Length: 119
Image 1 (cartoon, rainbow, N blue to C red):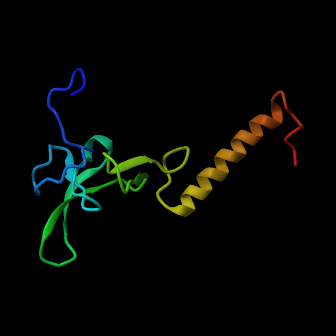
Image 2: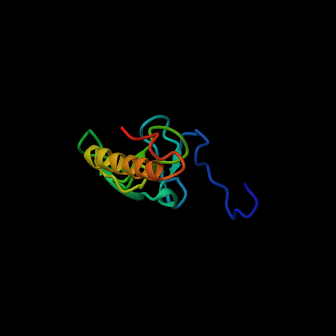
């Protein structure tokens, strides 16, 4: 437990737990060992989903579409997609990257290296 923490958590500990035993704001990772992963605190929403058997429901973490879902680790949701963090699709990510690059290149063209980056 870190200084200032009120309660201990098993997030990221890699210990398999029974369904429903995760702390508030965490969800059970069904990708690998079934350990609890942070969800709400990293921008996600704890929800339920129908398992592949079509009968069993299970707790899942749904990440916002502008965050990268993580396949392993203590968190279910990772960094934002792209430099602005607004991209939700591959196409939007490509546009965001191009716009960011053009902005940086434009700044370089008029800065101390003016003309050296033209082309």
